[in-house]
Length: 186
Image: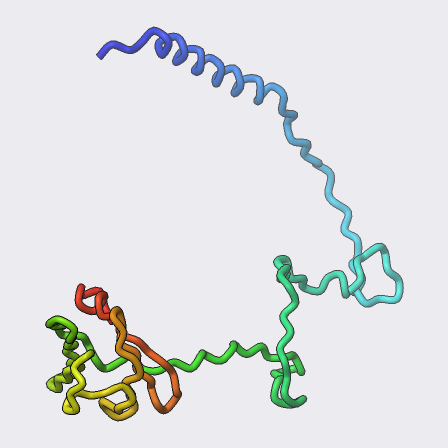
């Protein structure tokens, strides 16, 4: 393998520059000064002694927080004086409560049949199958307002979704028909 000319020139120059830097660095350093005399030992005084020889105060020696919190102040609302206090009277910051959520809808869309103006949506819950008929007018099909399974009421049947209400919390939930049929979830 042939090395290009610019690399053949730069490599020796780099070696020479490194060697020069090492040699000049050693020449500029002074040898360390070694004191051969025996050191004088001063008797030490207690920090709390009456006479202070320029020693720092006790408060200056106390531990410091090197990384203090620099964000906005955190203020926790306290219902009563005893509830929000922790050890040493410090305020206890409690996380916000989780939002109330209904459990996942127990139905999955198994299929959709379209026959003219009639549209039949097949819902399944385990072994149970429910056929919703949109535009049929048949009484045996569940209607809007019916409770299909305990705690779930059918509210709306639209072209793209079915809306249910979880009765214990009165929360509306919907199943996207197209998404459920494509297999990407409810």
